[in-house]
Length: 498
Image (cartoon, rainbow, N blue to C red; front, side):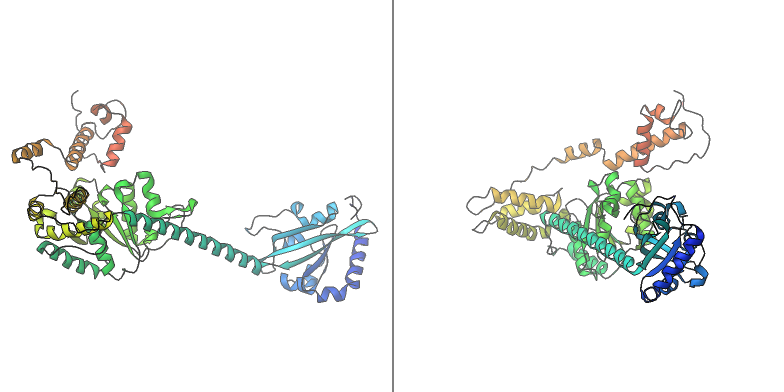
């Protein structure tokens, strides 16, 4: 098409006659067309409107004729922001003489609603002079909505695929974790009590807290509760809180939306979330978990939407969480929400009658692992030694001793190698000298509180608690946060003399 210069435009009278002729000559086509068709002159005024266009726009042809079409139906974007007519591709057609095709804009109806359109604006010439433009448009709202639904569906498929991949990776990780997953071994009174507690916990929907020393089978108890409960067909998702840093705790629990990554809580939907060593959960994660349990809703980071949380929490700890809650190093509200059902996993020394059964179970497992063709045995004297030993490492230590003995076995007899017992007086002396982690935290907390009291709560600067303690203010602030200290100045005190 020959380019038409903007200055060569028809005058208003000639343009009106020209478009009247166009509409008359093409009346049958305009009335039969399913697309909306209208004409505008070089001033942007409407010159004709076909029935399909009038129906889609909600205006009658008479109401549109002679009006500025952009101001009437094309004045704003879909978000309501102003659409200046200088930016309008429809008007550009008779300004630059080129055809303009637009795939995704909106026209506004008479009732104030809008619909998505695609259109072509074609310049019309009368004897090589630009007379205006003819616009052919169609309503693409349904197609656009279908495209949006398709994109959303594909996004959901991608999210579900990522979730399944994460679940698969998680399950592969769990498969690699050694330990008994098929049942609880033991007939001692202590284990019979545990089995009764498992039955009670499985019949409830409440959260549970399993206490006990390391190696006492707390995860095994949690799995038994899950499998015996109505959630048994759902996922059992495990988080080792000792491995979570402050930076990781948020994304591990709730996910990472920018990376389209699901959190462990979402993976546990409809099942059980097992929090191993929950006492080591960072303070920020404790606060987040507390809000989740109080509100019963899950809100991913960066997303304002929420949804109901359908996850049961079973937590475990080898620390005294009640004491930690009293010290303030563990959120007391969280402790009480988790400790609805309390279970104490007995130490192996409290269930010595179960040691032969456990030893035989571990020996069977290690025989399969080492692919031993002949049966391995434990002598009666060695079994007696196993039953008399105090097992500071509990069942995990027993399993280690059995596996090491099987590796060193000779003639089908495994070799039991136990550490020599420590004399009682040495144990007493060591106990008097050793400071436990909980005691150390108590001591640090008391010391910091005393410094804050002496300085009236001041941390930074001259005369502050950091200066008094001889550490950097940032270090002190970090320790205050990690120890969960919430200092409130109760009275003005005289500073301690230096």
